[in-house]
Length: 81
Image 1 (cartoon, rainbow, N blue to C red):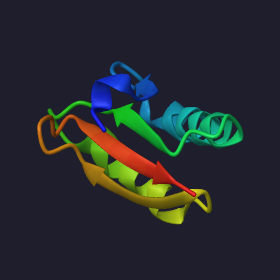
Image 2: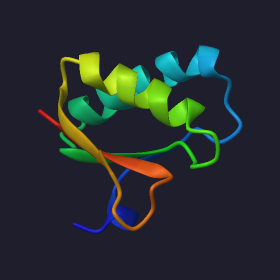
Image 3: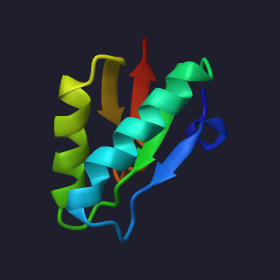
């Protein structure tokens, strides 16, 4: 599936302190809507947001798997349960 058709959360310009709440809410909402794949855009500059997002995803009970997009490493594709 192409990532341009998937629901997206853009975290550009967000502070690390609010990323946890935004990502959790986005995952929970999409799970309730029955979406199996989502995209989280974190950018690719310093990897601070990337690391934070991946740490959140590792421990989230609704996440089956996730990986950096092969075509755009500034976003992560998430597979939900």
